[in-house]
Length: 134
Picture 1: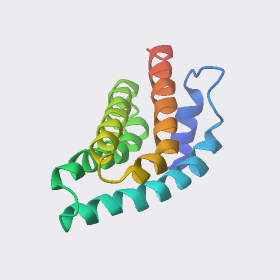
Picture 2 (picture 1 turned 90 degrees about the vertical axis):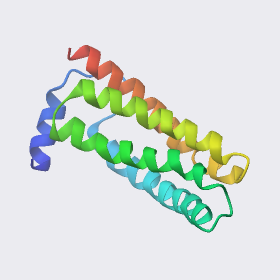
Picture 3 (picture 1 turned 180 degrees about the horizontal axis):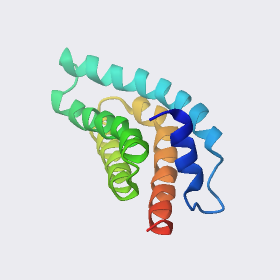
Picture 4 (picture 1 turned 60 degrees about the horizontal axis):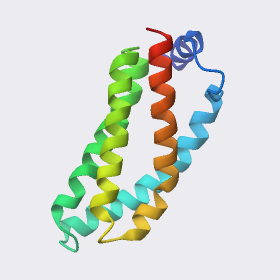
């Protein structure tokens, strides 16, 4: 699917008045992916070299999988319900990840506050869009 097809499909969805314009998502995710790259890579490095328990990395891996799956589900499959389920999983795995890493590296939790805030907002937005387009 071409970007213009995805943009057209998304533009035709009923959205709440407080939904940001589509152009906001790219810059926000660019910043968030930089945070994710640095902090998640740190967790994986520390887990691989046993500076932290390896189990701490599991929710970070699940978060990456669910996060990366969202775009394909939402825009590739054009499935709002599956996207709503996925974004709830993104939020849940993120909270789980940050709870698990807190005793080992509090700075990773603090660094991911923008990610948590955006995913919480995105979850509410996706759930609202799903209901409005039911």
